[in-house]
Image (tube, rainbow, N blue to C red; front, side, top):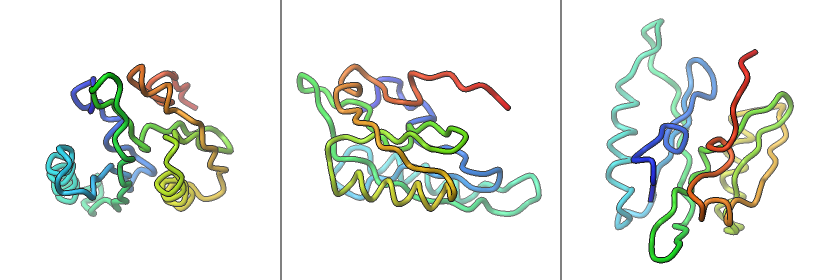
Amino acid sequence: GDDTDGHIDDITRFIRSDALLTAVEPNPDDPNHRPLAENLEKLRALRTAAGRPYEIREMPMPEPCHRIGKRMPSSYVNYLVLNGAVLMPTFRQPGRDAEAAEILADCFPGREIVGIDCYDIVLESGTIHCMTQQQPS
């Protein structure tokens, strides 16, 4: 369901220099399950510049969002980190949206997690991180 053929901002993101947040698909029948599991396996083999394994946090995918029979690239990993907050895409899936917010709150302590309804936005192929440009500090 990714029109970009796997842009990294929908799959895996740094949450710190030694920690990653990566999308996983818990449903073994979903076509994203296997490639995301393979990605997770490869991430577990990576090492930091200091030679230590990365801390890896898993973020379950939302239920699929479709437009005219095509699966759209919905992912909670497509968030945007701001100075005091994290803008997190939501997809009108209260249970999964809440679980994603809890995971992000744990990954970004001290920042407010602000859910932004991106259901209509993802139907046009992308969400928050895709449509913003970050300015380095």
